[in-house]
Image 1 (cartoon, rainbow, N blue to C red):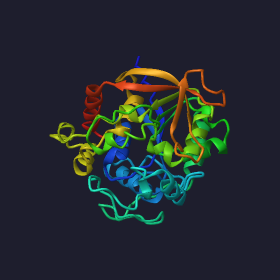
Image 2: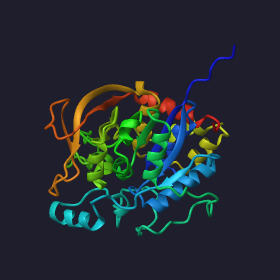
Image 3: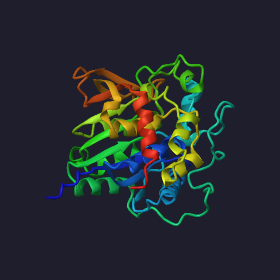
Image 4: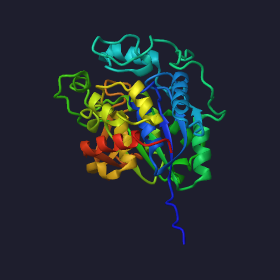
Length: 352
């Protein structure tokens, strides 16, 4: 009697898919390469870049690796409440934010990420391989999220690695959305990230240890997302993502002698030297044993417009103020060798 094939985990990836390469897209590539996951679709949002350019980069990735079967749904252009102008006003009162994603008008000398010049939401910079052959689907990200969870009740894991506007909109569109999903895994929030290093990624947390970009860009959406009634939430905070880096050596291990499309994309577009922010979140989803220490915390975001706007609020599990803040499983430490090994293994696989 033939053995029954294992059931693949259904996943929707919600991400500010800025690229090419970089942590955003490489984390998606990891999940796409996993033999244990069925990616139902990608939903895009403004964050590191504007949603139109992010959507183009997601489609470019899928074309490059031969996975145009995966639908892409474009999501929110703007946060629910926060705005670019409001952020500038906040900075005049409270000092500059080290990182603002699509709203960065200029970059410090130490930043070496490959970015186009500052531009507005309707500009899509030229792609490295010319015009796209594919397009996003007509449904919005929030509509797609709701529709897929309704179609597969209790089966869909949401992996969220950008600002959380789409998830908040989905929760408002269908109040049962979160409860009908299998679980939420998100990269966001900050508790006490290591600020002892000399590089930019450590030093920016010396004075703002609880401010993390995904939550700070749209704090209201992050709070709505947390309170939406999920069965299970796993938080991969900034704390565990500051130290592990995508090194040239790691890229070489993943690409040398490997003709696969994923390895080719990595070898062509990898931006080394940066923390593996979203790759770590993807690894936690794919292999929970990479988390070597976790803790339950009640979690919310500061929404007043003062100096702490968008900062992470936390309490011992069950000991919050009782205003709807959920208890969340927070990853506090990871096995970095296991992270690297899984990254290399997945990048060396042929396209599923």
